[in-house]
Image (cartoon, rainbow, N blue to C red; front, side, top):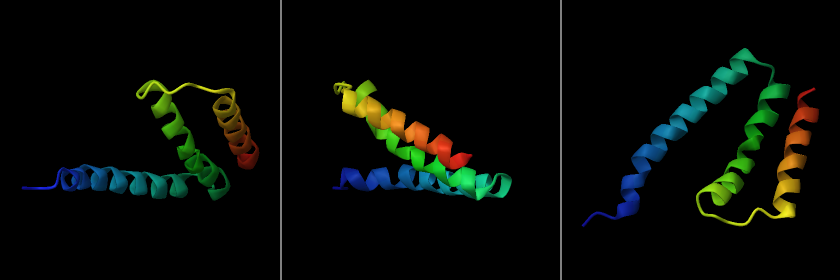
Length: 78
């Protein structure tokens, strides 16, 4: 019997390869000072996933965290 988690490794590997290629392409096109802060916005996706898919409550702390992350990204990209 095959462990079901092993079956997840192939699609996750493909997504990781695509993400890495996109990251290097972005570094080729844009300046590093803009690309790096934008790639660090990945922290917002788990919060949105939890809110949309898992129906977790959207608290003021999470909203402020997302807002501060967006403002920080904008300020770092200037």
